[in-house]
Length: 509
Image (cartoon, rainbow, N blue to C red; front, side, top):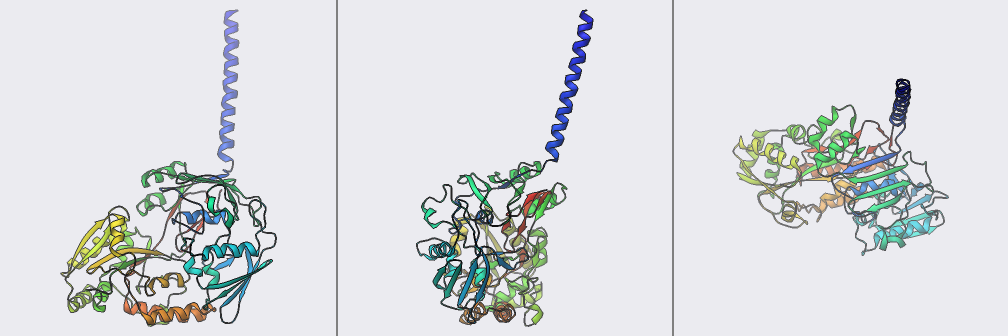
């Protein structure tokens, strides 16, 4: 009897175990094959605030297309397309622009987004009391007229690229500004569910979004510690996307079939070396020319930027492969790597030594570039002293524009949209820390931005680019790719030329 009962218990245990094992396998199978509906984005820094108009960090740019809409937006091919505005027109002079708005567009709380909304946001951005980088792009607005679903902007000067200038003027409720970080109303495909400054942001679908509903139920931004921890989190699947992947991590990540790299089709993030044009030795054009011929651009692209850089053959902020680059039209000097030519020019300028002002706390590519330059110039008898300092000390040497720093070359970079106006404006008088104040260039820039037609505007930009190429207000060795890491099943994500990651149409396959 005891033996029989024992056998029965064993049989029941075996049956239960088998059932439990099947259930476990079945659950695992369902879990593994079910589409994940939440996206986790990691970075080595947090999001400090949510207001898209007063943007404080580049990382915040990733958040804005998810939560906010604008009249216009950039498309993946670099062109500007409609967003809240369905169409727009300009008068012949380029001083008046009229935008037609979508009917029935709403905020996440159901209130309408109309012409008065648009006017109030632009007036907020134009207010001198509002701390925003966007005001420089729209400072030419002299008045705004709002009527139902039509907004007209009157400009104090012609502007042919106005639709591109306003892509970052996102639609918010201005009356929420005093407490914006507490449950703000959104106008994009998602809305804020929870926000802890510098820790995390969680967002869910906006049911009142005018466009197609996003494919992810939830998107969460989290802090992933240092760079090593962040890459590890991506590898093990704790995060689905890593914002700004360290360049040194790109090669091993690229070889992992579970991971992928997301970058722009054509990058417009230019590496720039600055020097003071108001003091020796770089107030001498020959010294600048010598440095331009000393740059081993190919080595910098390969070693400092791990192959994710493209040489700037014509030493221009406008990339070689940009539709705006004027090399095909002729008249540009190609600054090839030529140490003998550099030696002769350095001797004519009387340059035997200068210093490289780099960063000790970040940007290892800066130090790599300095060492490549140092090694090159050593062979022709020119000494380069490499000095690496912390960010604040580094910045204080040359920023803001107008400071004198004789005998120094400092690495920097410029992240710009594809339209040349946003990169070329860095060279306007009083803007670049190299202190290049050139009235002829200023006039060429003013002429170019006032031309509405793309073909006609390119002709004007060519004249400005020729002057940049000749006078060398900066050294631009390469244009590099801003990289973002992701799980291999991420779809729909893309990157603007300036490095801004778009996740508004992203989903996990």
